[in-house]
Image (cartoon, rainbow over all chains, first blue to last red; front, side):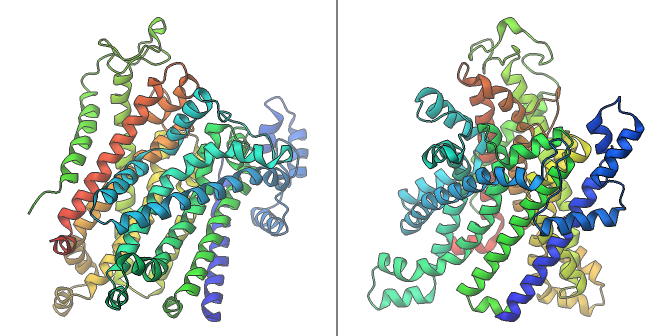
Length: 315
Length: 273
């Protein structure tokens, strides 16, 4: 087990290094000098040169990569080119919108998908199953940002239960924040719930065909008892993987939903940074998102090994 | 062999959209470059079957022109994914367990770690927004999908007797992959291609919705929705029509993919009968 964890950890670190190199290189080849861009077309060359030195753009490429990476490890993401404030602070403010949104959506998606998937599996081939499967086909096909627009039309504009967008901030009360994130979380969760319900159903059906379920039925358990006591726990392995993948997707997918609801999250930060050519912010936010994805996948792999000892051997 | 019902309904929906895109090359009900501000935001009527948008353009014509963009972007993105992913997967399978296999598979994991949206954002940050960059962004994400699928399926084929026979006959790994492995993967690749195609349609819509896809004057469903966002309360049809078009297109492709899988995968056929 320890060897497995170490091997996975080494590949985690390697992935992070390669990812940071890719992101740095991509940002590096962008034409244009950020210093010149910030000062505008009428800036004098010596002013630009001074700003370049101040921003650390004079250093060699490897030196700048190293200082970017070592800074990030210490929690220092550098200074925003446009706002002249630490990027770490800007990100920290925004994370408290994007992260709760992703978690909220994940909870909703799980709450919808589990009962739906279990119900469909227990009614395999019957009208209840067909209805759930039909609904999931539809759920997968609906673009979440369009669904978000419909939610706004119905629940914000017509019924006035929620506001159409914006975020009051957590310091104005938890309830206000949760309320502002509710429609966005539903919009994000719906297609994910559809996928998760399908995985839940097919995984359960696979388990219901296994010998240990037949044994359980043979010793006198009803189909329902066999499902709840024996099949469900074993069916959780693929479901857990998908939940892990979905979390990273929800974090990144939130970028679009944040645009629909004008939420001040990482998504809006990244778009503002692109239009202002504030590349250090783009670089850091992208790295953070990729970091989150890689770490979540690592955690899922470990959870896998804990649940299923057979997987440890393969390494 | 019975043709699955999902395949028929899915293929019909997909054909309808494709037909709309093809017809738009020779004819659309109205010219979408002519603006008619006096007739803006009209509800669906006999003159404009799906109504008009905020510039008075005919929405049915816009949908037909947008279908071209959606199909072209998604098709090319699948093409990129297949053209690079399938050879990589075949190569990794032919050299299973080698350093090369390891490098290809870790590379795949790495691309998976960049959500396609994040790739698109990076590309846009570098090269600016355009349909071509949307194709590249979605296409890059398709590469590991096809590489993984191909490698997995090819590995099991390498264990089969007909491959052993070919090896005994002295064929190279390259020729075996090309002449014996690849033809046996066709069905699998067609099914996955359909699925990635529908995901590509969704991704294109999302990218152009946030302004990272096709730029005006090229019509696109995603941008129609972006334009509709502030108008949805006064003229709901401007948001409903493009959205429903996307849903029906993706639904059609997914049904077609499911149906094709049932039709082409003999193992499922046996299990069902």
